[in-house]
Structure formats: structure tokens, C-alpha cells
Image (cartoon, rainbow over all chains, first blue to last red; front, side, top):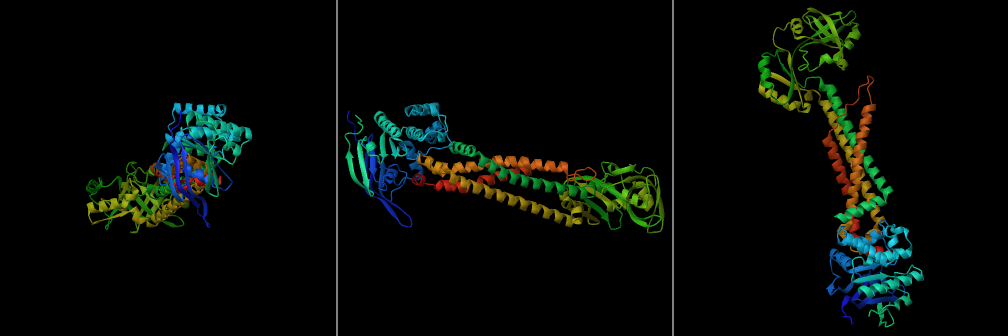
Length: 240
Length: 382
């Protein structure tokens, strides 16, 4: 069955300049549309602006110029409180350095987005979902372990489970396998493909690993803050 | 509000050494403030009790040294303020004649009835008994030692008009004030009247009141009721220097407490500010996954409040413990307490409440810091 193509995130003429003693322009007039349910890779050299672009797509940072739309709603001029709500409801993040909360156990980390959403009033069903997600990422036996006491790969899988907790429409991952060995990397990318296929969750993955990019449906290449190529990858993971 | 509270509690629990140090810092500060406050209150109370506890708070006299119509006067003033004792006395000066030297004395005649005797002489007897028959007196231990007399001995008092009276010593008292112990002779009203040639009326009427710091106001009301032919004096007017000393002591106590609270405020603020820096990674990630700025701030406000509450509670307990230990171990040579513990619980509660509020305020600067922390700073800088 063919999917109806609808944009989940759209960037219009987005520019980003990091202000400082010397202003550093990072992104130039980026126009980009991310289709709902797609599996996207952003590639490019170090310093090409990949992570900055991902931060714009994830509404973690404000553009210096241009517009950002999430589900056809302007988000670049939203108040911080509304933006926090939008991120919590719509997006899941997986960062390169895991960024788990060391004060919490594995399952508590996974539950945190739900905790934020429900203002601390977690239900049995929520706990059950967190458990299922940990089963999905193969960590159910570690769910009560302190998050700082598990391996890097396990931390990354915990971060993935956390990113999926609120059933987000889009997961943004910045070099999610950058610090992992090749076997674990493969495992995690398989997991992304599986979730994308089963739940129709949109994925935007920043990577410098061409092998991983080749497994996605669309490869966006950046150079010096500009999109130099945007290709549909028919060899990537099929959604159909 | 629930989530920031849960996160704050978790941050405190997981950084337990740091939390224990902050709590101890608050507790030590508060305990010092509480200890000093109670100690100074108790010392002041002990000082006031020893100075005016067994002395007239208000004295009614007349220029001709003859207060008559006592019963009418009593009826007029007994409902004024919170007068607890009305004690009429007949008194007069004389010289106690001894073999080597004469000693100026004041003969005081009044009732020894415990309900009215403001000096509570019966409790102050160290030997012998109260004057019962005519010509019996009791003298202070200091005077007895100085002239070398005891119970059952006779002494002679010479008056300004040249006449003399011979008294039998029925007992010896100790009012704990050497100036009194060497110069006051107590007797019953009848003996005083006969000895001083005062057939009716009284020399003075002494009053004691419940709230001794209101003595000046009550004295004013008494004066209004009995008229200007009487002189009405009060202990506050007679002890202005003591009062000023006490006031100075109170002000210095308040200053110490203020500075202790300021130092507690500064310490908690600085430690919590460091905590925000330590936890900036956590705050950044929580914000990235949807925690809003206001809830991020509340985490640190709650941290300040939780630490402040535990620290204050501990501080109050330590402060009270320190004071009771001090009161227990600090004794006079005769074994009596140097200070009688007087704990104003409302004052302790107020100080505890102020300390708790101050600790909560200490979370404001760190909370503002957390409020403006951008998740992108943490993500970009790692």
C-alpha cells in the first residue's frame, strides 16, 4: 500500500549563525522537507553543519533566520514552554554521548519523557510500556541497573528506548553509533529500521558512516552549511 | 510540582555526601542562632529575677512618710493591671551598735504571709525562725558574720532621735544580695510600729506585678487612680542602666542571629549554584526531552527547601540540646543553675521558620541559572 506523503518537519530558508567575538555562520538558506514515516540520513564532513541542522529539525535551537514547521505549525517562534511540550510529545532524541541521567536506573531513564508528560504521575501501563521497549532493545534484564553502570552500547539502547517512550512521530539521532563497535552499530541500525517499519516512526540520523547511510531511504549530504545532494536511496530499508 | 520535587529529592539522595555537608552547614548555623537566642533570653530572665524578682516592682509613698487609709487604697488599686502582691511596710533607719563599729541598718516591718511577702523571707532563712514575739528580728547572714552574732543573741539599734531598741535575733536570712544582707532587719509589723514610734499608717506600699516589663505602665495607672498626693515609683525607672544593658544584649543577640542567617543563606546559595553547574548536563537533557524552564527552576527551589527543612530541624534540635547541656553543666558553687532555662517556643518556631524561608530563598539564584540554561549548550559542549 502506497504511503501518503505528508511532511512532519519543514525548514524554509533556515540560516544559523553562532554569535561570539567572531560570528560563525553554520547553515545557509536550508530548505528541507522531512516526510512522515521516512528513514533519513544526514551525512557530511566534520564541521559541515550536520548536528546544527539536526538541532534545528529537533527544535533544540532557534534559527537565526528562516522558518521551521512541525506538522505544518510554525515552531521557530514558539515560546520555550510550548516548544518543550512539542519536543516531549512529538520528538525523541538519541545523542552521540547517550546522555542518560546517572541518578536514575535504566527503566527510570526510559520513563522520564512520560514522567515529564504526565507531571510525575506514572501509571502501571506506562511502566509496562517501558518494560516492553527495554525488551525491544534487549535490556529487560538490566532495567533496574543504575544507568551509569552499564556498557556504552547498552546506554545507547537505553537512550533509544527512552526516545520511543512517548511514541514520538519523529526520532532524531545524532551519531547514535559514533562511539560503538561495529557489531553494536549494526544492531542499533537494524533496530531503527525495525521501529521505522513497524511503527512508521520517522527517523533522521546524522552519521558520517556511509554504510549506515546506505541503509536509509534518503541521504541528505551537507557541505559547508549547504545541502549539496539530496537523494532517494532505493537500496535502503524498504518501508513497503 | 510533583516531578520537580521528585527530581530534587533524587538529586539530593544521589549526592548524599554533598547533601549531608549542606544539611550540617545549615544545622550548625541554625543551632548557634537558637542556642544564643535561648541563652541570652534565659540569662536576661535570671538577671531580672535576681534583681527584681524578690523586690518591689512599684512603690507607693507619701512625702510625710505616712500612707494611711490602706484598705481604701488597696481597694482602689487591686484591679489595676496584673498586680499580684500588695505589701504594706513600716520601715525606718537606724544604727546597729556593735562593740567595734556601728552599722547603718533599715528596719522593715511587714507580714511574713507567703501570699503577700514580696521578699519570701521564710524561704530565705538559713537558720532560726521568723520573728514571732515582740522585739524579735531576723538579720542577714553577712551582718551576722560581720558583728559575730547568731540566733538567740541580742542586738541594739540606735535611732536618729537618740533612743535605742534591743532586739532578739530569731533567725538569719540570705537574700543573695550582700548590700541587703548587711543592712536590712526584718520584723513583724507590730514590733516595727513600736520601735519606730509609728502608731498607724505605713511607710510605703510595695506592689508586684505579673508582667514586670509593664511595671511603668501599671505604675502610671496606679498614680492616676490614687491621685497626685502619692509618689509612685517603678523598678524600670530605678534601674535604667540595667534595662539599657539588657537592651544592648538583646540587640547584639539579634545581630549575631542575623549574621548567622546571612552566612547560612550565602553558603546554601553558593553550594546550590555549584550544584546547578554540576547538574547542568542533567538539566540540559531533561529540557531537551521536554522539561520546561519553570519546572527546571523548581528542582533547585525544592532542593533548597528540602535541605533547608532538614537542616533547620536538625539545627533546632542541636541548638536545644546544646542549651540543655549548658544549663545542666554550668552550675554555681552552691550547685544551683547559672541560668534557669527559659525557652520561648514561639521564638524557636519563628527562628526555625525564618531559617527555612532563608534556605528556600537560597535556591532562587541557582533556579534562575537553571531556568536560562539552554539544552543546546549541553548538547553542543557535551
